[in-house]
Image (cartoon, rainbow, N blue to C red):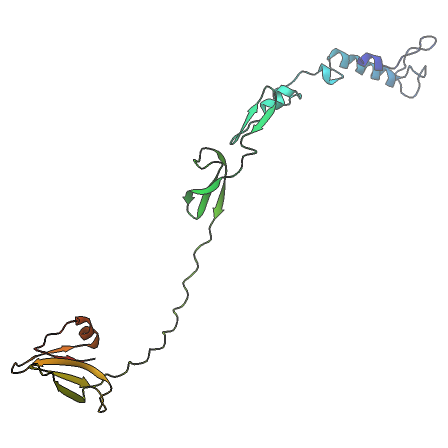
Length: 221
């Protein structure tokens, strides 16, 4: 609607000329205020001020809505694509199942893990990060353990037996008790040959397997 259509009509006829005083109109619609209002309407009409948004041109900052402008304001990054012509957004791998997750980067105390959709790690579904806590302080040293018990003291040879083998040799047996029940070794001596002496542990003596008839073996421990 044009602004001129909002003017207050002045009824023509007797005393239709507006007065110069607001308090003494010659006609109900012929007051000074009415005349000033209608003059203002004429002035605004001359400025070509529009009365609807259809008459307003679009500026550089404040834009009217349109599908084209709205679609140009949208962008997609990462595992997706966007068609600005249709406004369609496609999320890649949206229905892809997870094959495995692997650690792909470490920066400071932040680890980055990648979610893969295949064993060959060609389908990247996404990533996430894990912030690790700082290492705790070392605890106090524990108390030393109790010393183990001392081993049983070794026993010396307190008794021997000599047996003539009737073949030119004698067997000498060594015992650690008078009753001769705890035998710790023996040696076979050739008659008329002086033996040598070899001091061995019981384990070393047992490990020999074969013994020199001219050696006198002493078990020590």
